[in-house]
Length: 289
Image (tube, rainbow, N blue to C red; front, side, top):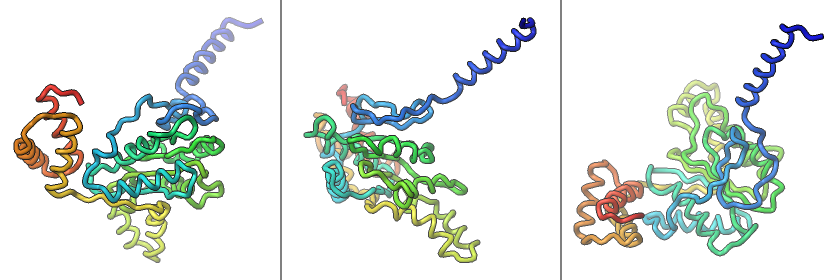
C-alpha cells in the first residue's frame, strides 16, 4: 500500500521527468530527405529543417566576380553530375557576393534537373560545426547529392571545433561521403585571426609546426576563390544590372550620381552596398523587388 507521501513523491518525479523531456532537444532523425532542395541543419530542432524557398539572386545579376562565378559554377555542375569536384573556400572582402554566389550557383545548376537529380543545399551554422560528423553520417547513404554550405566561417582563440571540420573534409577515418561537397565563405583566407597565428608562432618551440595545424584547415579546400573590393566601374555595373532586372525607371546619369553618393555615405563600394541602394530606389519608386 502506497503512503500519501510516497504518492506525492511519485508525482514530483513525473513532473521533473516531463520537464526534462520538454527541455531536451528532439532526437535527430536518421534518414536523409527524399524531397526538398534546401535545408538548414539544426540538430537542436530535430536535424534538417526544410526551407520552402532559398533566398538569393539569379546568377547573371552577380557582376564584377566573373572568374569566381564561372569557376564555382563549373565545380558545382561537375559535382551534381557525379564527377570529381573540390570543396571550395570563398574568402575576401565583405559584401562582394560570396554567399550570394553559392546560392545562385545552386539555383543555376538545378534549373534543368528533376527529382533525385536535383542538388540539395544544406546550410550549417558556424556554431554547429562540431556536429558535422553526425550530419555526414545521416547523408552518406542517400542517393541524392548534397552541397553543405557555411557562411562567414572562422575560428577564434581556444576554439577547437575546427578539428571536427578538418577530419570531416579530409583525413578522418570515415572520410567525406562521395555525395557531399562543402562550401564555406569567410573574410579570412586561413579561417584563423592573424593575431592567433602570430601568437602561436611567437610562443612555440617550433613556430612552423605550431601554425601548421591552424593553416592546414584551409588546405582542406581544393578550391580557393578570392573576392576583392570593387572599383567604381564595377560598382556602377552592379547598380545598372539590378536596375535593369527589376525595371527601375530612372535616368542613368541620375542613377549613377545617387549610387555614388550612397556609396560615399557607406564608406565602401560592394555588391551589398549596390543592392541596398537599389532597395532604397525601388522603395522610392513604389516598385516591389
